[in-house]
Image 1 (cartoon, one colour):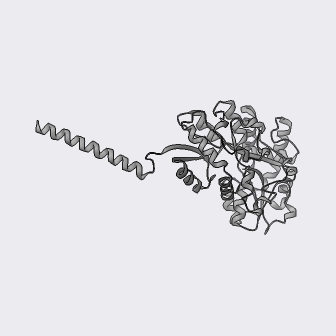
Image 2 (cartoon, rainbow, N blue to C red):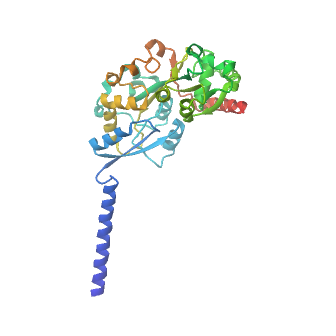
Image 3 (cartoon, rainbow, N blue to C red):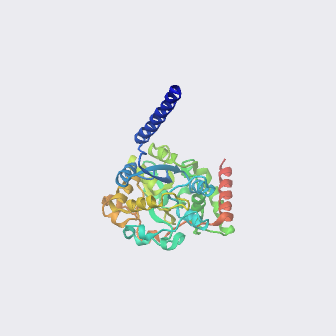
Amino acid sequence: MKKLQSLIIGIAVILILLFLGGQQLEKSSGMAGAKVLNIYNWGDYIDPSLLKQFEKEYGYKVNYETFDSNEAMFTKLAQGGVSYDLTIPSEYMIEKMIEENLVQKLDYSQIEGIENIDPRFLDMSFDQGNQYSIPYFWGTLGIIYNDKFIDSAEMTKWADLWRPELNNSIMMIDGAREVMGIGLNRLGYSLNSKSMFELEQAVMELRSLMPNIKALVADEIKMYMINEESPVAITFSGEAADMMYENENLHYVIPEEGSNLWFDNIVIPHNAKNVEGAYDFINFMLKPEIAAQNAEYIGYSTPNKEALKLLPPEITEDEQFYPSDELISRLEVYENLGPEYIGIYNDFFLELKMYRN
């Protein structure tokens, strides 16, 4: 009997020690007593110190995962199996996610600070009335060039990329909508064209550009341009801002023919488990001082008009990053083209890549 009692006591002690050890492990990892908020966002798309500040102020533990394309994000959410409380897709993908019932309607009784958003960036075609999304960042697609190799007067429009002296010199962004859009823009067509005649013409134009393309890349463009391994590249405005910070010879221009005006908005996925935390994070990011700090760190344009007042004038007065209404009128937002035309754009883009090789 004594042996049995000793065995029971021994097991009880072990269980207590395991429990205490688990408690200590949770404390050391910052999980004890913390509510968890799962965020799915683009890489390097928030000031990391803001996540820590949010955790401290609101008592959450933030799990932060990243994706590298709207399509990868959509596929993961559509497949199920994992749930996120917040994600930040682009405009055309938000439209698709609404159609597929992958996002929740917003409860504005739980949102504070929406009045800080510039009305120009609300009620867009992809989410009329902002029933599902809150603006996070916006920007443009354009050209970045090095003035050591290219004169500013020679790089003002998409057509300048076709100049023979740029043979094997251009770092092209690796994206179907972006590349096809350059061809469409040059010809004066819509970025959302569904005309096979217009699309085929754009492809013909882009074929003649291929000798000037040094490589089709994504994140690597930063390194190439900062290190002056290429004189010109196609990139997004925020990426350009990062490059210009590192190399004073670099300049960003929105082409005269027009370009893409893009938006990334915060949404709450349909299967979010911490909806309360999602609203807390939205309200946190809507605060002017938070939005300003994030914009200065990331380099993209903030839609928060109150945050603009807190940013340095050299940032907010630069029309390439905060374009005038007149310039914005020449820009176009990507629309969700539907699976048929997304496939056509992708096929044309693949054809161009193969043609280049």
